[in-house]
Image (cartoon, rainbow, N blue to C red; front, side, top):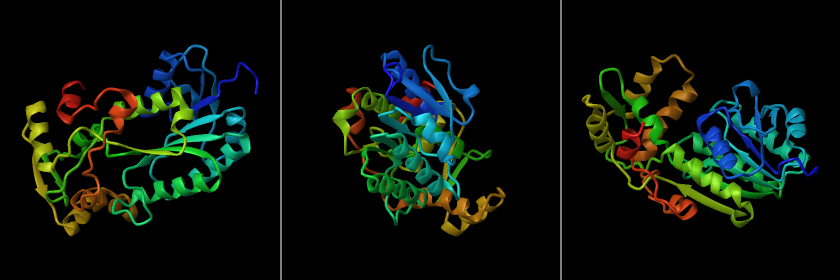
Length: 282
């Protein structure tokens, strides 16, 4: 590997998570390269090389990763092909000689996870392990950032979550944790971290916080599963995606997102943001 080639590569830097990680690494003076399908959308970081690559194109991805030691792999957008594309990209990383993948997974990733999309993350974790790569998995809870978008135009937050609790995490805290790992990656080999906020809230409590912060009344309606499937069918999206959306709530009802983990503070030295603090700072 040429001396002027950074050993760390960051994917997803056109998005909020990868972009924040890239900026934090630049501020810390960590040499990196950025990979994206559309390089024109990448943040401008002086002296940082950029490469066009996609998860589904093994040949181009392998060339973009040549010489990289540690790869920050942000999970692809949900799709029917996500497992296949992740595997293709991991194969490209192996071909390029990558030795360590830091992957953004999901809390409770398992082959039978209630939240159906967490099954994709488990598949990717297992595939990375099967390639005899060093790994670090960041199992993120649901992002606080998306919760306001769950509220309907009528001010109602609907879903079959019952009285289950959600330890949602701010995306910025995930980025801080990831950047700290990438600064000294050898200290995190083989580790699995669960990244959550500082408290687990019911959707009634989340609605009350949204009401206080926005000044607009937000209420929670505990749908049945059938009501949830029917209400989301009006969106016109595919059935698998509707079921995935609904399973977000049923996973909360089943207690799968209630764990409050200390890992954000252990990694960064600072506690994670609570939902109200996050919303106040938006």
